[in-house]
Length: 230
Image 1 (cartoon, rainbow, N blue to C red):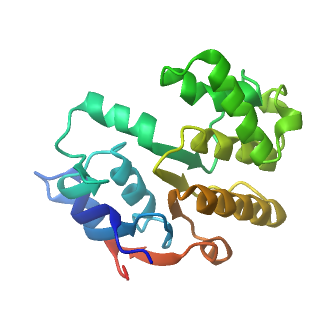
Image 2 (cartoon, rainbow, N blue to C red; image 1 turned 120 degrees about the vertical axis):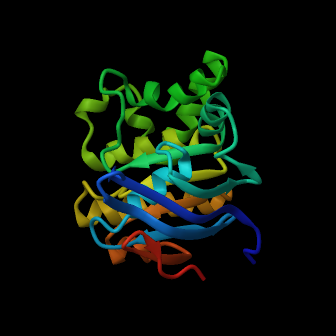
Protein backbone atom coordinates (compact mmCIF):
# COMPACT_ATOMS: atom_id res chain seq x y z
CA UNK A 1 0.00 0.00 0.00
CA UNK A 2 1.27 3.44 -0.95
CA UNK A 3 1.24 5.55 2.20
CA UNK A 4 4.45 7.57 2.13
CA UNK A 5 4.79 10.75 0.14
CA UNK A 6 8.07 11.14 -1.73
CA UNK A 7 6.93 14.50 -3.14
CA UNK A 8 4.89 17.08 -1.24
CA UNK A 9 4.19 20.40 -2.91
CA UNK A 10 1.89 23.09 -1.62
CA UNK A 11 0.48 26.47 -2.67
CA UNK A 12 2.71 26.69 -5.74
CA UNK A 13 2.54 29.97 -7.62
CA UNK A 14 4.38 30.69 -10.86
CA UNK A 15 3.53 33.91 -12.66
CA UNK A 16 4.86 35.48 -15.84
CA UNK A 17 4.62 39.10 -16.89
CA UNK A 18 4.92 42.56 -15.36
CA UNK A 19 3.58 42.82 -11.82
CA UNK A 20 3.82 46.63 -11.81
CA UNK A 21 1.42 46.91 -14.73
CA UNK A 22 -0.81 44.19 -13.36
CA UNK A 23 -0.23 42.07 -16.43
CA UNK A 24 0.49 38.72 -14.85
CA UNK A 25 -0.28 35.32 -16.27
CA UNK A 26 -0.41 32.51 -13.73
CA UNK A 27 0.98 29.18 -14.94
CA UNK A 28 0.56 27.85 -11.39
CA UNK A 29 -1.97 29.44 -9.06
CA UNK A 30 -1.99 27.68 -5.70
CA UNK A 31 -1.26 24.15 -6.94
CA UNK A 32 -0.99 21.36 -4.34
CA UNK A 33 0.34 17.89 -5.08
CA UNK A 34 1.42 14.79 -3.20
CA UNK A 35 3.11 11.84 -4.90
CA UNK A 36 3.45 8.50 -3.15
CA UNK A 37 6.74 6.62 -3.12
CA UNK A 38 6.77 3.95 -5.80
CA UNK A 39 3.66 5.09 -7.64
CA UNK A 40 3.22 6.11 -11.24
CA UNK A 41 1.28 9.36 -11.31
CA UNK A 42 -0.16 10.87 -14.48
CA UNK A 43 -0.65 14.64 -14.58
CA UNK A 44 -3.27 15.53 -17.17
CA UNK A 45 -4.88 18.71 -18.41
CA UNK A 46 -5.48 20.79 -21.53
CA UNK A 47 -2.72 22.72 -23.28
CA UNK A 48 -1.72 25.75 -21.24
CA UNK A 49 -3.19 24.36 -18.03
CA UNK A 50 0.14 24.43 -16.18
CA UNK A 51 0.89 20.71 -16.10
CA UNK A 52 4.38 20.96 -17.64
CA UNK A 53 5.18 24.01 -15.51
CA UNK A 54 4.22 21.94 -12.47
CA UNK A 55 6.53 19.12 -13.54
CA UNK A 56 9.52 21.40 -14.08
CA UNK A 57 8.84 23.26 -10.84
CA UNK A 58 9.00 19.97 -8.94
CA UNK A 59 12.44 19.28 -10.39
CA UNK A 60 13.77 22.74 -9.61
CA UNK A 61 14.45 23.37 -13.30
CA UNK A 62 12.21 26.42 -13.14
CA UNK A 63 11.77 28.61 -10.09
CA UNK A 64 8.47 29.52 -8.50
CA UNK A 65 7.18 32.74 -6.97
CA UNK A 66 5.94 31.12 -3.78
CA UNK A 67 5.04 27.79 -2.23
CA UNK A 68 6.90 24.79 -0.90
CA UNK A 69 8.36 21.69 -2.52
CA UNK A 70 9.66 18.79 -0.45
CA UNK A 71 11.24 15.82 -2.19
CA UNK A 72 12.31 12.74 -0.25
CA UNK A 73 12.23 14.80 2.93
CA UNK A 74 14.32 17.63 1.51
CA UNK A 75 13.02 21.16 0.90
CA UNK A 76 14.44 21.88 -2.57
CA UNK A 77 13.63 25.58 -2.30
CA UNK A 78 16.01 26.00 0.63
CA UNK A 79 19.09 24.19 -0.63
CA UNK A 80 22.05 25.58 -2.58
CA UNK A 81 22.10 25.42 -6.37
CA UNK A 82 25.02 22.97 -6.20
CA UNK A 83 23.00 20.68 -3.90
CA UNK A 84 19.99 20.86 -6.22
CA UNK A 85 22.19 20.00 -9.20
CA UNK A 86 23.58 17.00 -7.31
CA UNK A 87 20.05 15.93 -6.38
CA UNK A 88 18.96 16.00 -10.02
CA UNK A 89 22.02 14.04 -11.13
CA UNK A 90 21.73 11.29 -8.51
CA UNK A 91 18.04 10.94 -7.60
CA UNK A 92 16.14 12.19 -10.65
CA UNK A 93 15.77 10.68 -14.10
CA UNK A 94 14.24 12.55 -17.02
CA UNK A 95 12.36 11.42 -20.11
CA UNK A 96 11.18 14.10 -22.54
CA UNK A 97 8.84 14.14 -25.54
CA UNK A 98 11.79 14.69 -27.85
CA UNK A 99 14.23 12.38 -26.10
CA UNK A 100 17.17 14.86 -26.09
CA UNK A 101 19.75 12.19 -26.81
CA UNK A 102 23.17 13.54 -27.77
CA UNK A 103 23.09 13.00 -31.55
CA UNK A 104 26.86 12.70 -31.95
CA UNK A 105 26.99 9.77 -29.52
CA UNK A 106 26.01 6.15 -29.87
CA UNK A 107 23.13 4.64 -27.94
CA UNK A 108 25.63 3.08 -25.52
CA UNK A 109 27.45 6.38 -25.01
CA UNK A 110 24.18 8.18 -24.32
CA UNK A 111 23.17 5.72 -21.61
CA UNK A 112 26.63 5.67 -20.02
CA UNK A 113 26.86 9.48 -19.94
CA UNK A 114 24.92 10.12 -16.68
CA UNK A 115 27.08 7.59 -14.85
CA UNK A 116 30.29 9.11 -16.19
CA UNK A 117 29.11 12.57 -15.11
CA UNK A 118 28.53 11.15 -11.63
CA UNK A 119 32.11 9.91 -11.44
CA UNK A 120 31.49 6.21 -12.11
CA UNK A 121 34.53 4.48 -13.58
CA UNK A 122 34.33 4.10 -17.33
CA UNK A 123 34.37 0.29 -17.41
CA UNK A 124 31.55 -0.03 -14.89
CA UNK A 125 29.56 2.78 -16.52
CA UNK A 126 29.62 1.03 -19.88
CA UNK A 127 28.80 -2.35 -18.37
CA UNK A 128 25.76 -0.83 -16.67
CA UNK A 129 24.77 1.00 -19.84
CA UNK A 130 24.93 -2.22 -21.84
CA UNK A 131 22.80 -4.00 -19.22
CA UNK A 132 20.16 -1.30 -19.44
CA UNK A 133 20.12 -1.31 -23.22
CA UNK A 134 19.47 -5.03 -23.02
CA UNK A 135 16.56 -4.44 -20.60
CA UNK A 136 14.90 -2.06 -23.05
CA UNK A 137 15.53 -4.32 -26.03
CA UNK A 138 18.20 -2.12 -27.60
CA UNK A 139 21.41 -4.07 -27.00
CA UNK A 140 21.81 -4.84 -30.72
CA UNK A 141 21.77 -1.10 -31.43
CA UNK A 142 24.34 -0.16 -28.78
CA UNK A 143 26.93 1.10 -31.27
CA UNK A 144 24.48 2.85 -33.56
CA UNK A 145 24.44 6.62 -33.66
CA UNK A 146 21.37 8.13 -32.03
CA UNK A 147 20.55 9.86 -35.31
CA UNK A 148 19.90 6.60 -37.20
CA UNK A 149 17.46 5.19 -34.65
CA UNK A 150 13.71 5.40 -35.09
CA UNK A 151 11.61 7.52 -32.75
CA UNK A 152 10.53 4.51 -30.73
CA UNK A 153 14.09 3.21 -30.51
CA UNK A 154 15.39 6.59 -29.40
CA UNK A 155 12.77 6.77 -26.65
CA UNK A 156 13.79 3.31 -25.41
CA UNK A 157 17.37 4.55 -25.18
CA UNK A 158 16.13 7.64 -23.34
CA UNK A 159 14.33 5.43 -20.81
CA UNK A 160 17.50 3.40 -20.26
CA UNK A 161 19.45 6.64 -19.78
CA UNK A 162 16.90 7.91 -17.24
CA UNK A 163 16.97 4.69 -15.23
CA UNK A 164 20.66 3.78 -15.39
CA UNK A 165 21.51 5.88 -12.31
CA UNK A 166 18.79 4.04 -10.34
CA UNK A 167 16.90 7.26 -9.57
CA UNK A 168 14.25 7.53 -6.89
CA UNK A 169 12.01 9.53 -9.24
CA UNK A 170 11.65 9.75 -13.00
CA UNK A 171 9.99 12.86 -14.40
CA UNK A 172 8.50 12.31 -17.85
CA UNK A 173 7.09 15.12 -19.99
CA UNK A 174 4.87 13.77 -22.79
CA UNK A 175 7.28 10.84 -23.29
CA UNK A 176 5.24 9.35 -26.14
CA UNK A 177 4.08 12.61 -27.71
CA UNK A 178 6.35 12.20 -30.74
CA UNK A 179 5.45 8.54 -31.34
CA UNK A 180 2.70 6.79 -33.24
CA UNK A 181 0.03 4.82 -31.37
CA UNK A 182 1.77 1.43 -31.57
CA UNK A 183 5.16 2.74 -30.47
CA UNK A 184 3.48 4.76 -27.71
CA UNK A 185 1.87 1.63 -26.28
CA UNK A 186 5.08 -0.39 -26.54
CA UNK A 187 7.22 2.30 -24.92
CA UNK A 188 4.77 2.92 -22.07
CA UNK A 189 4.36 -0.78 -21.36
CA UNK A 190 8.14 -1.14 -21.14
CA UNK A 191 8.53 2.02 -19.07
CA UNK A 192 5.90 1.00 -16.54
CA UNK A 193 7.16 -2.57 -16.26
CA UNK A 194 10.73 -1.51 -15.50
CA UNK A 195 9.63 1.24 -13.11
CA UNK A 196 7.56 -1.28 -11.15
CA UNK A 197 10.43 -3.78 -11.09
CA UNK A 198 12.84 -1.17 -9.72
CA UNK A 199 10.37 0.56 -7.37
CA UNK A 200 10.94 3.88 -9.12
CA UNK A 201 8.41 6.67 -8.67
CA UNK A 202 7.26 8.14 -11.99
CA UNK A 203 5.64 11.54 -12.45
CA UNK A 204 4.24 11.64 -15.96
CA UNK A 205 2.73 14.57 -17.86
CA UNK A 206 0.43 13.59 -20.71
CA UNK A 207 -2.70 14.74 -22.48
CA UNK A 208 -3.49 11.25 -23.79
CA UNK A 209 -5.99 9.19 -21.74
CA UNK A 210 -4.58 5.98 -23.24
CA UNK A 211 -1.14 6.84 -21.82
CA UNK A 212 -2.49 8.00 -18.46
CA UNK A 213 -4.24 4.64 -18.17
CA UNK A 214 -0.85 3.06 -17.45
CA UNK A 215 -0.52 5.10 -14.26
CA UNK A 216 -1.61 4.08 -10.78
CA UNK A 217 -3.35 7.41 -10.32
CA UNK A 218 -4.29 10.51 -12.31
CA UNK A 219 -4.62 14.16 -11.36
CA UNK A 220 -6.02 16.97 -13.47
CA UNK A 221 -4.44 20.41 -13.77
CA UNK A 222 -6.59 23.30 -14.93
CA UNK A 223 -5.92 27.04 -14.67
CA UNK A 224 -2.78 26.41 -12.64
CA UNK A 225 -4.49 24.32 -9.97
CA UNK A 226 -4.51 20.59 -9.27
CA UNK A 227 -8.19 19.71 -9.22
CA UNK A 228 -7.87 16.20 -7.84
CA UNK A 229 -5.18 14.67 -5.67
CA UNK A 230 -6.54 11.51 -4.10
